[in-house]
Length: 100
Figure (tube, rainbow, N blue to C red):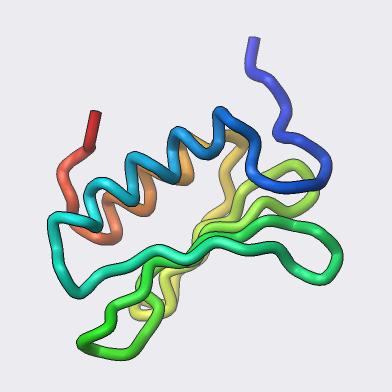
């Protein structure tokens, strides 16, 4: 049975595992970095930023117990029920092969 995402607060340990997968892949490209924080209402978000092009490539957020993945470059936005699916979407948009 799938577990619902937390209502509010920082990324859970399980969610952080997914972010760490993405962070590890970004480390292989020296101009990509990840930044995570929370909105004023407490929803956590994470971005993948390209320092060479000075732009956000991927934005992942948890809103109302769902995940949204936005790719501003391609003008795409998708919602998912799980963090794993959100991370997989980010990998696909960034054209990384799936990390362990």
